[in-house]
Amino acid sequence: MSMPFYVSPEQMMKDRADFARKGIGRGRSVAVIRYADGVLFVSENPSAALHKISEIYDRIAFAAVGRYNEFENLRIAGVRLADMRGYSYDRLDVTGRGLANAYAQTLGTIFSSGAEKPYEIEIFVAEVGDTPEEDQVFRLTFDGQVVEEHDVAVMGGAAESVTKYLEERYTQGLSRDDALKLAAAALGHSETGHRNIPAGDLEVAVLDRTRSQERKFKRLDDKALATILAGSESTAETPGPTHRAPEGTGDPTSNGTPDGAAPEDIAPGPEDEPPVAP
Image 1 (tube, rainbow, N blue to C red):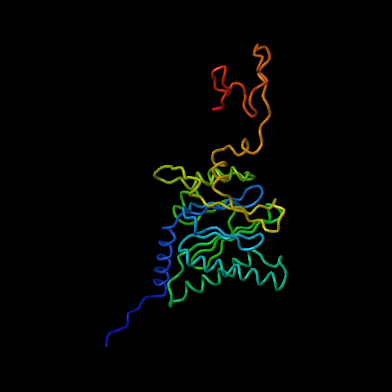
Image 2 (image 1 turned 30 degrees about the vertical axis):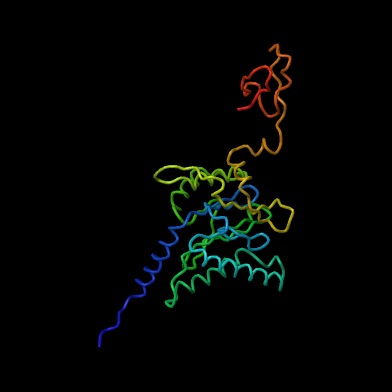
């Protein structure tokens, strides 16, 4: 009779952890940044059908990397738990911390069980408060550990290089647009070089405390992303003040400068054509 194959518990846990890390590392990174008015989620996701960033409840959002079917099951379970708790008790009883603890119990149980493989996922659970000090971002690993993140956090893909890029350039009190530009640049940064990620390949959402609705979650579409990343959102939405040519130029048409452009920024053109801004 042959002896049964034996693996020590320590080695089994190590093998399961390595297996999960490899699966998570194959995914594209997700970055979370706290900005002045809330929490920003940015991920490279060319798929228009599969969302890595989603809403859970009024002030709570969810982001994940790894196997889609696994984190989608957890997302749906989180939505059901939040709805049931809010309906049975009060909407204020639904908190990001409570959801993070529930997810941690599920992930920890699956990881320590020898009957099934560990989940190849990592999760962000974020809640926006009435003030920046009340914002909370929790990161949950494949083995059920919970870590509260501050300012910036990244998971999946080249998480180390993206995190380093963000930490070196992040400052508190960033606007939403500045935080988005920083996150997009960080996701395109790698040890081998830098690439510009098209707006259509980004999935972006925010928890915006300034929204008047109960629901603070909002997605940014491709058109808005392209405008922000091009740095032209302010001029596209609100025209700037009219600039006048300096006195003494002798130009009788100096008051006809287009809104939002200084005279020295106007490209020269024929007299019968209007000036065109570069």
